[in-house]
Length: 528
Image (tube, rainbow, N blue to C red; front, side, top):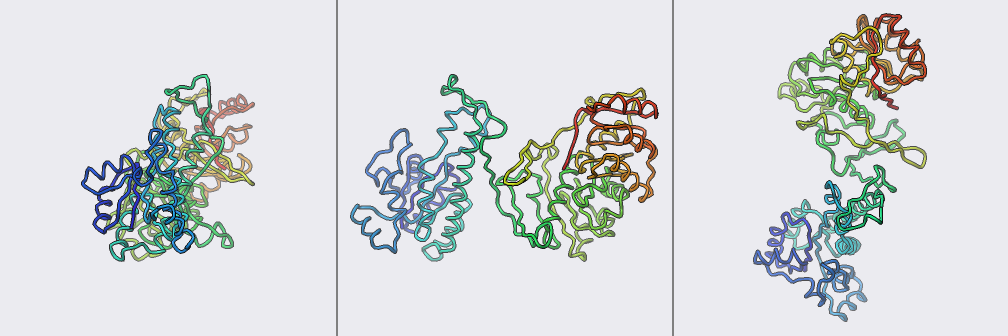
């Protein structure tokens, strides 16, 4: 058996080569890899000896040769192929171990020059990978160090790779080539090329949205069905999921997550991550129906649950702090579909042992979890895609513009920031009443802002919560004074809205007339 090794990332390669040599595998390698293996005392033949042609053009040309690709592509079960190899003095290559130039890591560096980006586009590596992957029945293609243990296990056990493993390696290889080419396309089609500035030090300006957008995802699992039972679905994650994101979670118990579970869980998790103090978020049909902060997980949950106990039935619950026994016992009294937290105490897990259908998700949060967010958001439309930067705007007290005679109190300002944070995660049109760090009434997803205001009041009344002396956040401006009148009639004394309407002054005058405070945020948070 002959193995050709040519790796940019040399992690684990020496140990792998030693194991291959111990099994009697002949080693062939290129430049830097060959030098490394030779320094370790391993017998290795350089590719230049095989091809009888020196590496050229600063290493750009070394493996692009019939003695390499013939050895990879020849079908062992085709006599004509084997005869051609014999006629031209070409030996077969049975195992190819390649990882590519670090293009993605290079272009991710600040100040990456165009010259550096281009130089890190691998040519020979992908060509060999494609050849070996195409001829998977005869050649094993290894493209990542994580595959080394499985390859060595089979070689040690039987002296060869199984069809199943070779095919899996081939699929992984073509996936890697697709990812690599997609990254190159994304980068190059984002470059605003300026010929007059071209030099080795030229760092091009790049468009935020590339001319071609290539997304790459890995399947996490097939789902029982989609949003409805007649639809099929699967869950995919980013190639490199961000720390603290839903895709990094581990399900500790419960039924398999459904399509709607995952969508709602993401809404709850992203919302609870926006708070830097202990918080609880309860979501139903992608909308927060209860959000609160508290000194403990139990207090945060108890306050969040009060907002809308009816909607909380069968909801998704997220905590941004570990769940202890007290919080677990309180949650266990209601019907919950999914419960998420950074961790669960042993006592908390015991509470749910008898509730085998409850899905418990543990999602570790990094120290800077509030800063770890999706950079882009996508939405499918007919034969197309909408792509935008994610709504990661954070409102600070200094951003607020007080536009009324009455000034908000410090307590009202604190609650306004809380309400505004929640409103960002409520479907438009969104109206959120809050007081003392908890939601008191939420109106979501209505065609009229006036109707959302009325619904929020109705829900508060149903939950037996008084809206007297509450604050209100509106995700977009009030186009008329009627919406303001509804929330003030309900008991609100302070309102936050973006401003920007032709009738802003009319609404400001109405607030002054009603004796309430109002602030403009200068940004809106539509969420469709």
